[in-house]
Length: 416
Image 1 (cartoon, one colour):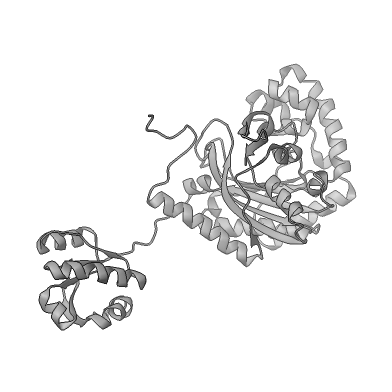
Image 2 (cartoon, helix red, strand yellow):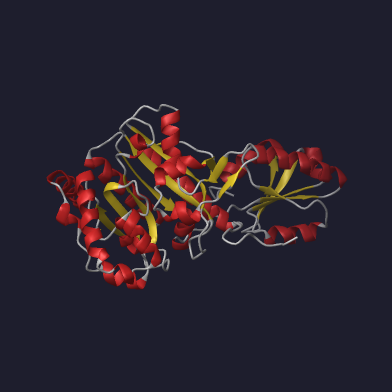
């Protein structure tokens, strides 16, 4: 047996788990403020859910999906991203739009593990369906900025934004890119040569150094904006300015999936190495109709929880226990009952099942307990407990019936 995790996966222990939970809970809380409804899709879907939406030129389809044939002979794929699965849910459940949906959970891609990038990773995901107004784009980006501010990392992250325009814009721009890149076809990487045939916009997303030099002089998509596309993008930029959200227009920014149109954006940082995107998303007005639903304008973004974990400083609030120190056989038996009662009233309790008073008091100090409850035959006969403040050493006798109130209120208010 191999006692190690599979490459690209990671165990979460103790404070890491608390940080992970904090990110999910914060995202859920902020999503409620913006009117998002929680949904959860399975971690695997029929493979066609992803192949029909992601496009056959995407790296996810060509290189990264975990796909297998189940015992019923069906092609199944572990979820590589959320949008395709959420669109499937939207159509299958006949959800009424407009609607805002929030989801979170694991996703899977077979790629080279790097800092903040794993083969099993987790995302927070936000989708808005049924709103074509550019105000929806501004509000969604504002939500992302709100989250970054809440996490305390907004100063280390910058917003890069671009517009792919409408269908007419994209068609003209593809033609312009093909004309440009064909002049350098033999100098492009193998991936980019393939993309030149399938989707030349994807070449702009290449990280190959030789490709980047060629891309630097490629035509700008803004040259092909229709009047409507230009106006749509301008309204978004004006909205961001109104909300004091700083941004940089990056004319070379495209998203890695084929279904995007109009707005595309990324919140990026220099603190994650090569994989600098913290949040990324955009608009996909034709996606739902392309897979059999009715025409439904949409926009969304997702963020990697592991990447956020690399950037934030978070430690859970220390919860100090109440430590039980029973003396004698009857007290040992009562300790089980007392611990159960205290815990069911929301109190953190710890104690050793055996040992001398001295050793147990030592354990209470090592555990940084806030209070010790000491009780033996005398206390049991009087239905009292001796309570020691572990910070001051002060002790007092308290009736058993009053101990919960003392621990919840008086002790926490430092009246003891």
